[in-house]
Image (cartoon, rainbow, N blue to C red):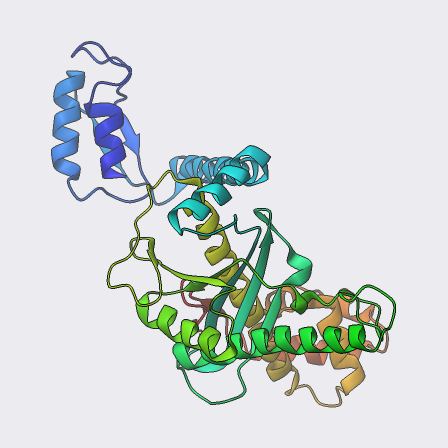
Length: 362
């Protein structure tokens, strides 16, 4: 923000004289720049009159700032959508990755993996799939970690990758057996369910969230399964958006405007979002069930009705008495008992979107 203010105003953009130009008497910002006084003094000198830099807390100016923020978020989302959907841009991204990673062919199928947990519990791995640079949400998968308890991201990633690529090898073996038996039909279609064998497709590129330790651990899985020569693996570290390759001491750094980097960021961010959504839903359901435990005579059927109708504690708290009475099996007394239980337990939740952890209850 500070850098933007200096470049937009202090560098003279849109103003030609010291008498004012486009520099306004007041600049509204969401947070105070660290060099607020220096910036205000510089702009005041350039404008020829006092310039105030202000962080509104309430009132019309706060409303205006909130509106500007929403507009900016919508503009950014639209830009990202247009950028991601453009065929030429996607082709350029995959060509860049092929070149920088020295791949024989462009990574037409990319799978991204991430690990998330709730304060060290309920560890889950997420897998997202991008084909031709576009998300294929029907092929996303989640893996609830079963081999250990507690928080160990590297061990969790090891389990997730072994399960995913172990399934790849199992599907391939089954397809080979079908072919050997002389059975007709597409080998990539499950003969029992008729559904595509989505795990039978190997990705051209695997992206794990993290740096060298995560990448080396993931590479060990591919080595053990005999897939190293077939599947390219990299890690994308959040701090500087560094690309780590197995066994390398130094990362690759792509230009910030690189379409290849942008595609990798989308894969990484989507795998993170997918894992967090899982935790948010599980936590919300658990909180609703916890509150409903205090309602006498509320059976399993009516519990499921409430969960199906409202889904979250926030939405359930917003319900009125008539909303509950209208549900099947809910009379006035039961509906009031639910509202009373909600009033006694008004705890909320906050989820750290950077880690997927519940960070606050209250």
